[in-house]
Length: 104
Image: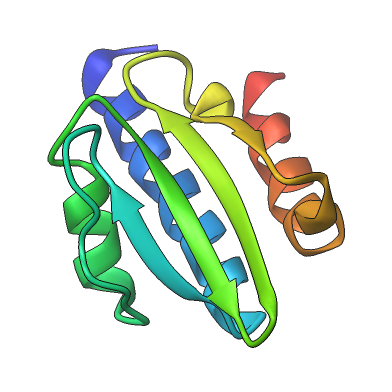
């Protein structure tokens, strides 16, 4: 797979994951390894902040609830989501299934 296609699929996967947590009602805070960026529900802003670095963590907030996701960029597109709170499994499963199909 070419570098260009890999990066396009990686961005597509990230947008799908961010969209899933936003639809679930979370506000998203990006940690770029140095600082926490302000919470946001703006998908384009969140994705832009995520791709400013080689990897990042997202802190997710809903009333009385906090979760997290960890992303690492530059590997295979279906491996972009490195780890996440188990409590997000139901929200992320449809995206995980769609992204994993790219590996085949």
